[in-house]
Length: 178
Image 1 (cartoon, one colour):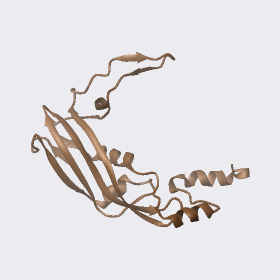
Image 2: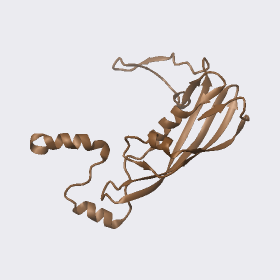
Image 3: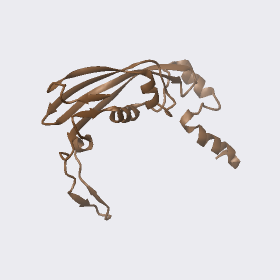
Image 4: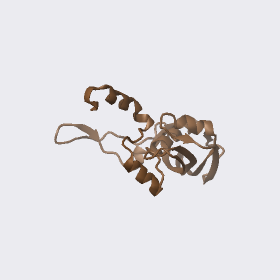
């Protein structure tokens, strides 16, 4: 997905459809499945080459409940916020600081942490959107049914999240199961 700075107004709102296969690729290895197309709503403000974006990605997710294993459908909304600045216009991070332990760093405000640098007149949002989506994904889905809670409490072995399955197999292969 790309934004052409020559074609967008100074401020406004735009909606985009996100294909299921794109969201599925972004969700890979999360243990969550995408249940259809998603929607991206973005508000933008363009000022002297600096583009501020704020919005959300909405999509339907499904996966087995982390407690009981029953199928769970969930409409997920991931907030997205960033400031795209032209190359050379990014904030300077030259204020070196040293703490009591001698560790060096710099002081960053929240705007500098959300800055993305671009070149040219077209901004590719794909990688930024993918990262924002992944950061916003829930670790696991759980159903809210009371029967689920009872079943999970009575189950001797809780289901393992697919992302931890490799470690679970390693734990079981060790003597004593620890």
